[in-house]
Length: 102
Image 1 (cartoon, rainbow, N blue to C red):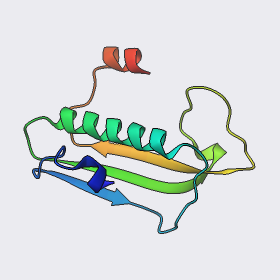
Image 2: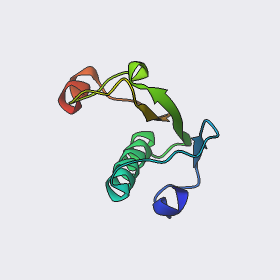
Image 3: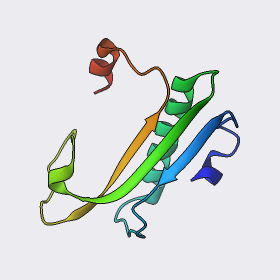
Image 4: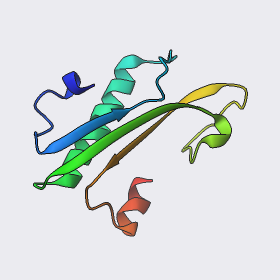
């Protein structure tokens, strides 16, 4: 993932990837997943702004019952999924902005 970002993440922002230590096989469009991850990481970079910060991508296998939220569709309870969580040390969004995004 860091090679996809090139020079888009300044050195003052640490970028960590945390995994459950298991290699997962994903079914889907890798190009779309890459684009989603890059967009999320660049949004995190922008949220941190000009200060030092940290972006962390956590990945782990999870059951459908562990999903915190889903925007559309339903998850199959018999399938294991890959849960992705991206966090950053940026200021965050106001409640009004959150309503517009989600």
